[in-house]
Length: 135
Image (cartoon, rainbow, N blue to C red; front, top):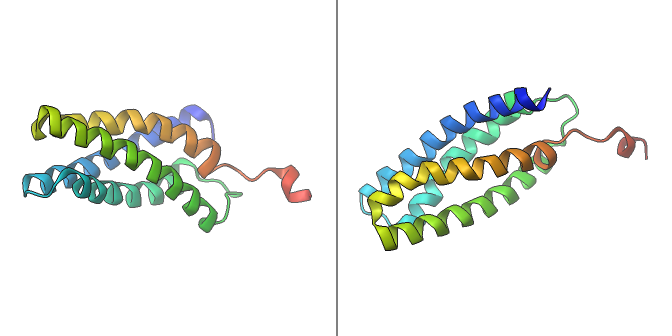
């Protein structure tokens, strides 16, 4: 599948992920939960949905790495992105207020999504190398 086709599908899935993630984050912080656990819950909800759907439609290949390897790679990427997201949201909430953090959440996740696409395409869901299989 071409990079353009994958990027369009990744964006579509990403928009849904951001809606799930941001919705959970905003709801939990509105109920009084602090930013770090609220963001963690939102990102878990969005990540579970995104891992499943991106594996099914965005990066679907016959020769994908085993699900365990993909999941380990995805978890590593997700942890790094979650640390960045949570740090930024905590700083914004602390210095500019919770409402600013609510508005910033989808923007932060959108920017991180660009990085996530590249890492997903070339590492998480990458096709097995025919050279490695022969060795």
